[in-house]
Picture (tube, rainbow, N blue to C red):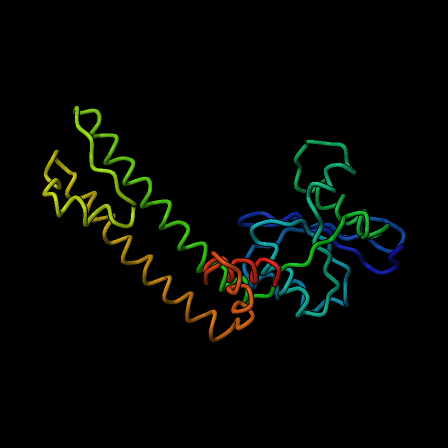
Length: 234
């Protein structure tokens, strides 16, 4: 059982609730902090080292790294495990912050703590997320174009999403109905942007993650899959 100060932080999007317990499990302080690096630093940099517990969430990667740099012991809890322990679906920020502090004070292993990937890996993985978003957007636009054509009693030719714009232009179908030419142009632009990202991913593999070359020896595994695997496991 931790004998120093244990803090639980219920991370919010703009503000977070903090509950601090002493070695006897008594609440010594409750407060709120803005979810900005400057404010978090101001609140936590002057304190003696704390054990700080927070749940996995959108902000937990950068917040946990910041608090560790400030010299605190940080435990990032599995939210599913916290809910199982508390046996409650009630969401109350102050109660959640206190629960995290009490669980962290008694036995952190109960929380099945996780370790976030490093900042560089997180940033590089964002590149894969951007590409995935563009691919999904392209698919939606192609499906929209095909769906509207069917509603007008015709069908657009079968082809891949990559070759969609070129195929419709080749067969002079971009003016089949009003607005189709805009969809075709957007699909073409997305295709060019995706190809640009593919080149960046290829360069990233060579420059920063040479271990991806080993994975690419497997038939069917390219730069995208190899990099996603390496960055997921780090």
